[in-house]
Every structure is written in C-alpha cells, then in structure tokens.
Image 1 (cartoon, rainbow, N blue to C red):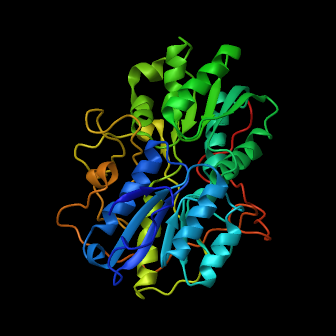
Image 2 (cartoon, rainbow, N blue to C red):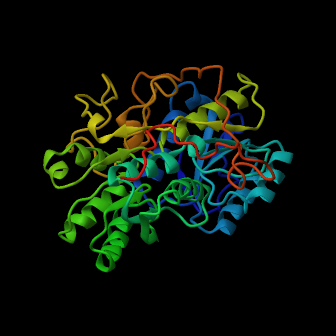
Length: 392
C-alpha cells in the first residue's frame, strides 16, 4: 500500500485490483508523532486479515491549506473512492465537497477532528471535555490564581477550537487567572518548545501552562530557560507521562494531568467504516464520541511489556520516543494493535480483525464543531473529571 503525497496519482492505469474496496486515508496536517501514529494504526488494520484481502488503501497528505484538502477529496471521489477516512483541516470549509462525495455514495469517516456536514461520520473524543477538564485541573493546582500560557494546536481546526473554548469557559470563572501568552504550537513537541521559550522570555514568572499536544516540549522549554517547573496539563505523550512521575521533577514543582487526543480514534473510525462498507453494520451518519483518556500525575504507571496491562499507561524511555503518543491501545475496540502497529504501520503477527461492540456512543451537538445549525446542550462545558474548587 504505497503512500501518495499530493493528489496527482489517485487513479488511472496504476489503480489496484478493482475487486477490492477502494479506501483513501486523507491527512491534512501531518507534522507530528500523533498524526504519524494515527495513520500507522489505519495502515496496520488495513493489512490485518481479512482486511488485507478486502481493502485497497491509499494515503494522501494535503497539508494545512483547506483548499488543498478539498482538491484531494475531489480527486479521490473522481477516482472511485468508496470510503474516505480523514483528519479534516477545517470543520466547515470541506462541507461542500463532502456533500458531493456523499451524493455519489462515498462514505466519509472523520477521526479526531470533525466537519459539520451531516452526511459525514465524525468519530472523535473532541466533545468528551479535554479543554474544560484539563483547565479545571490546572486552576485547582494553582489555587485559582496565577499567570498561565495557552499552548494551542493548528489554527482553524475544530479540535483546537473546541479545546480552547472549553478551557476558557473555566478560566473566565476565575478572575485571578491571567492568560499572559497564547500561541499556536501545531501539536508538535519541537514547535511547542520553541514557542513556549519565546513566551518565557517575556513572562519568566509564569505559574502554569495549559497545553494541547506537544506538552513535553513545554517542559523542555522550562528546563532550557532554567525556569522553575510549574503545573502543566497536556495530552498523552510518553515523555510527558514519565516527567509527571519523576520524583525530581515533582520536587521542582511539576504536576499536572495527561489527557487529550487518542490516535486510537483513527483505528476505531476505520473499523466502523469497514463494517459499514462490508454490510456488517447499519449506521446512519452521526457524531460518535470516543472516551477521554485521563491520567493524573499520581496515576502514571510504567508498563513492563509492550501493552497496556495491569493498569499501566506509559512505557520505559528505551522502548518508545518521548514524543510517542501512548493512547493507541483499546482492548475492547482495537485488540489487533501493537506497538509495531503504531510505530511502523505493520500488522500484529497472528492478529485478525475482531468485530466492534454493537453500540456506539453518540456525541452531543457542538455548534460549529460537529453540526450547523444546531443547539449545544446547556451543560456543554460541564467539568466531569475533577472537583470544581473555589479560588483560595
């Protein structure tokens, strides 16, 4: 299954066996470990029996320009795509081309990020409360007052918007919380380290950092500047989880919670798509919610093997890179996956595709994120993972 960068070679005489189900994996932004792992998970599942005999998978990377992804979708539709599994760059800009594809019978399954076109399936944890819950955890750690940084994701993306809206719904309740620097880090450790370093030059007295993916880079920036370590809330990188449990870092002031986006959403979306395309599941287009991982500093546990077993949730530093996003395993939804699946896109030896549970959890409406027009529930930003504490 060769990967294609761009859209020029989507059809024509080089097309694979017409008997196979033609599926395209469409990435927009692809410049970090999370995106690589999510894509690798899909590739590994597509190469796992019996899907290895059923599906022809092609990968297309279009970048952060919505028009480029629109053009990629157009080419896939014209090339006879039966399914498109995608990380969409925009919640709204792609709607017209998605609707055109749906009218031709293409099944669109979006993972992690979402679109508001109702004919698409959105499989995401984005409505599960990362922004508001991690923000409340940071507020609690700071006693309701202090100067903080916001390290965001990719501009214009639905995930970044929903996270930030949720976080700000909490921060605005605490007059003692001051957002002194806000910057886009593109969900990447190196970029986060650079941008956090710039923010520290202007605000060396920062008291806490609310970060999306790339959070390990924020800790490295604090160390580079010789700054005190402060509470940091972020996502699921292995380096971040190991740092949270490091006794020296704890003593120096680091605490926080590891939550956020699981690359496993891509695998879940792909398996749902395949069950629909092979007529093993009847599923109308809808918003499907993946559960939010939640690992506070005192609950980080290093695995002895290469799976999440016995409550473990991180790996020794010699097993995976610090940037490795740990949340690729789900024994109920994705028992076929292994570390090699996430790191290299290879199927697990001896594994076969297992059926998914019959029920899926419907996600609530979130205007401008997964539906439009629509009405959000009254408790859209309800904090569910931590106690809401008053300022000290």
